[in-house]
Image (cartoon, rainbow, N blue to C red; front, top):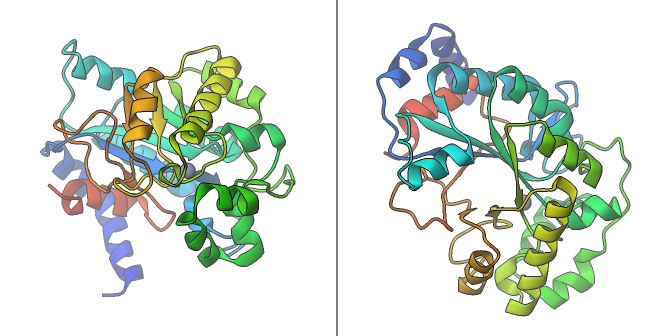
Length: 304
Ligand SMILES: [Zn+2]
């Protein structure tokens, strides 16, 4: 079967109510934490920007929200904390929506959809380029040298990376890759239902940096968010997020000291009850995941 045909079948099953019925009989083995990045206008032509697959079409995101509200049990990070502390129990199909990086499209296109379906979410932001109004480094390198060039930079030493990648190009505010301003982040944080988390100042691969620079990247990031939102920051997502590769024991010690109680990786799994609180798993969700595909993965294909 071709991918398009499989997708057609799954979306037909979704419309016929199959996944809804199957999901309501399911108990997930942990929290399904979904990791999104940007949301894009449906009319943005394919291939308009590098890494476009990280920016999900608004209509696709809405179909995900419909599945989550209709057939799962959406939770906030505070609901999860209450369950961890024994003050509450988690529902059978807990789903937590997260967004990484701080793209403005999360606020302009994503937040209204979340509000429509009354879904809580967590947004992890990089504060450096939000202030300087520049591109995130990987968006900049990809624009200049192509997507493949980005991978090579991820394995380079922090100093070399800083010298070459940290000073990025200024951004057109209408670009789909524009980040929120500090004032916009404050608006998002006050809207209710959305918790803001840390994601470093410049999105380096933390494990390539000495502990002192990791501390700077993390503490300055958390300080800025607290200043802009008026709230202490209690959650964090590691840039790139692969356990054993992109962060290390120093990173976790710094987070613990800074008062972070839940941190997220990109290990592709349910966040199971026995996971360390600073190494929670997530499912990266790309733009080729239709509503039917998300429902199929939640019901059958994600690891049990
Ligand atoms: Zn990121």
